[in-house]
Image (cartoon, rainbow, N blue to C red; front, side, top):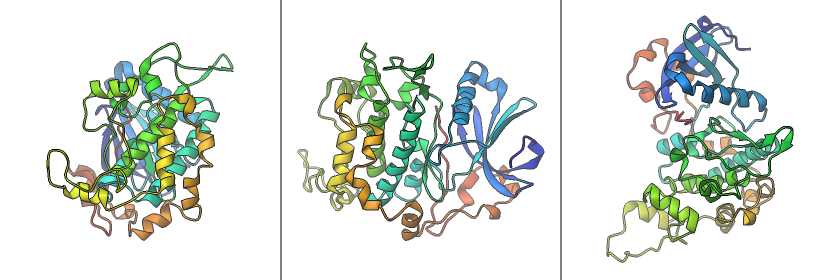
Length: 353
């Protein structure tokens, strides 16, 4: 359906930068089909020695075929530019969606729908013999009906010479950026190594991030994060609600902030608390696999609903992409003119590194 002729694509709006600002993501329209897509554009010369990361990601995505795994339609080179044509995620990443609509975290029904979709993608990924190693809210995208896992730049295979490797030991590239989400066994760098269960721990950290509207361990230093994960300690991420945030002044007699008041006025289900706690077990032996988690009781709460229905209940509608004019490519504020009924802006976070 989508060809490799750059003249058949109209670049409308710059959505975001990616790969340490060496690539640009555009909203584009394919002239022959009139369909809107996302286009990643790289200047090959700017990539230099890191072009292997981009090409490895493309190679891996070509091997995947699942509704909850990001795919790409085609890729091609035009002069010195490398282009990727991808499906357009109409709500952007989960991180963007929270910034636009749910600053203190997703409501539980939406969160559980997203977690269900992520798990289905992880089950497929692990079955294919891959570990994602960079799961977080900015690498989970939302289209009209489901959540889709992206950010495969440091994804790695657990297959070698036709056999399944029992454990891996190498630290993922760009691991500093994923420190808050990486499992303790990945960071330990010992002889025991790690398996695909490390993605389950990252799923727990992503669940905390999407429930609370803030990254796990956001308020402590990287050194302390590393120490906490390797040795265990008091700074354990949790779902912030009336059962975990006391509704009184703290030891310093500081007044209750509006943000804290929001947390203490809500309550997540016991099933969701249990799900997050089981996924965040420090010892991977006590941590369930992605496939086992699909039968967790928390998903009974959303057995008869989906993301599309939940977004409709909150009056969140996708942007009318046909209303975006070609001349908008020159706007400095990109998507600032794009509004939905709630008055929130639309963004995409494409930081895959």
